[in-house]
Length: 235
Figure (cartoon, rainbow, N blue to C red):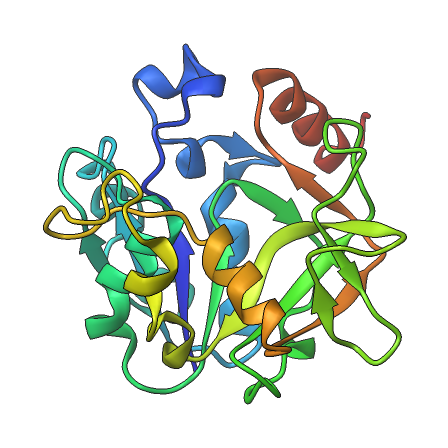
């Protein structure tokens, strides 16, 4: 099973730190954020990882090389100077990911989630990991139903962790779903993944699970400092 790590974002909320370092390469607990993912993916048996890059893209091969230090083969999906958003980034990386289900994870989160729990063959087109709502997202994103399906609406929403398993078919109808959204007709196309998720949920093609453990969306310098302190055992 292959994996995609989203690492192409501009990291605007993390400035000035991201003026010179891409957010997934910022360090917490003594190593870059993305390194935590690569180590966990390798530990679960993943051997091939695609990293999509845009902002300060040249720093990723310099830091990660070909992945050998992690027991992986790392390939880079280069998007150019303008990031393609999550949906466009996933679509652009499909040539490297192949035609089997793959793991996708945001490069700017930290979690103790065990990737081995993820299904190798999701029941539908996608399987999402949801977490308890953090202070910066109190309303949550999606509802996890008792039968394991994920829906856009529900009584008690949870937050999407940025971790999921996707079939390539998840992107099959992307142009119809995205419509005339800005960037959709560029080459390569640029679009967000959330509309595709909601469209798949409408056809009952998204399953999910709740991770009650540690998870941090490292979206601000303060959250990075707090995470680093926790991982160092001082926070």
